[in-house]
Image 1: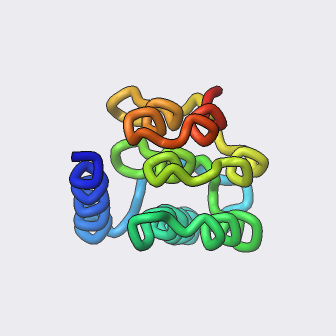
Image 2: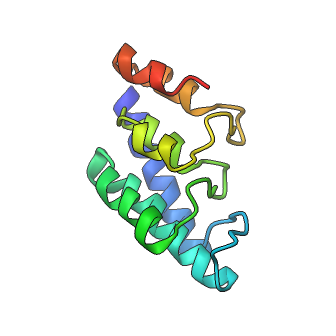
Length: 130
């Protein structure tokens, strides 16, 4: 059931991003324009959904080297830290880069709630606690 929910979210995420071609994100002081920011944040979210485990290395690279917004949110309010929780990835690098652990998606879930829902290891889940 958990894997089906992950696959459903990934499918909806990819179809919606293709249909709309962008995410709704906050303005970053480092952005040259909205299109550039949107493109970077789309890359960031896609990296975290890569291969059913999330590509944390690529996500961190995009934030550090290309200045993607670590707190960008997609069409349903999901942020990179929430996507990391979806695959039970260790959030320490995202947190050190300023990820907001108190952000909520459109359903009112925070990263900690998502980590708990997907039965992450207790040591990993506790790292998502605000």
